[in-house]
Length: 526
Image (cartoon, rainbow, N blue to C red; front, top):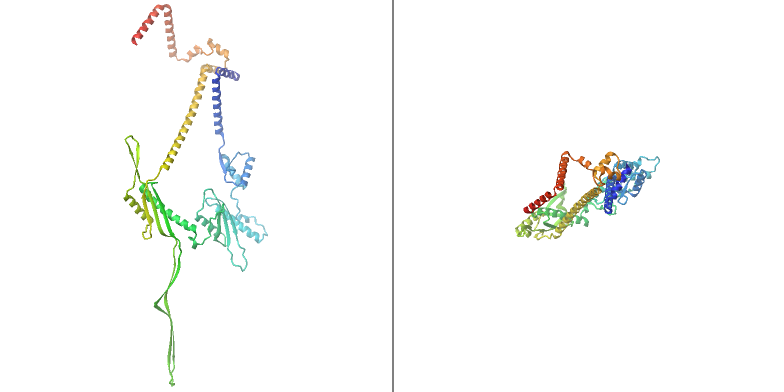
């Protein structure tokens, strides 16, 4: 049966022209390639990330084990990320965590689990320091944004009759990409380290990042505002808060993106410490008084009486110790720029015209009063608040909006065109295939009759079947496919045709006269 099928396919293929054969081959190859690609895409494994940001040593061990287990994998980000089939991720993670390639393998107090008898005091102190460092590393690694960390201690040796020496600590942080620690978080880490180890003060803890940048500043609380960086940060913080407050108020009046606010603050960072002692001479206080009396009596004529009084006075004294605060605002300057209003109208041709209308003076005055109230305006201090109205230049932003709108429309049109081309290609392939099959001269009825008999006839049998030509269909086969009503109409039509033909043969003159009469009637009607 296979040989007969191949013969009929070859016979059909030989009936086409060379151009038709080329089209059939191209369409067949395209459809076969599309089917193969679809099957490969549907059966491809779905990969999920097993581990990312791996160390080279750990990545090489994991890849070696995956090869030995014959598990497919993919490497990304210069070998730091390993992906495996999604259904194997959970099992492989458990396996590699158990193997110790990845995960938290930092030794803390576990170093004492295998303590040996007879260890020297030096080894015990060393293990204690290792345990403290490991425990702190575990804790710091749990902080959000911290990928890894290292902690180093310098602990003094306790000596008899020696002054207590303070220890020191260093912390190295390896942060995740795009994550930065605030000053408060750095202070929290320094406090954590200093309170976890005896003999270390927060000022003795240094925190740096992976690039060697100093994150902690060794300053005492009295010099919090003493550095230039702290003064600059405080000034910018005050300016930013005032700017945000003013902008929120103004945008509620003029609308979003219709106002620009800039704030400049002059701060007083001078620190004055003064002690004053004042005495009041008019207000005297007796502190102590001592009296000595001496009397002599008898027949002696030189009898006498004496009295000594010693009084200690103290003047009223007032002692005043004054320390001025730092970071006070000396002068405040606020510049506000607001945009006008845009009114849209339609001209006679139907085109829209946008007209800019400036803000009125009373509106600007009301805005200025609101700004003064928001920032705490003080005229005696020399504060300045300026509000101006100018038309904003939105040509660049408008051009950007038009560009992105055109790019979005272009992308949408390309998507639609690509889908239409795919649909047109599929439809064209279907039409071309159908036309080529119809032009081959083999009917569906013949193929059905061949398949129902279980054998495919050869070329000679197909051409001689029921006495018809090779490209014709047998009449009885066609008549059997018609309904009874259709067969009756066809028989009536054939009978009428036979009667007309026989009439024309028997009476040609009457037939010619009848035709002339019809033609004359048609011409008259026209």
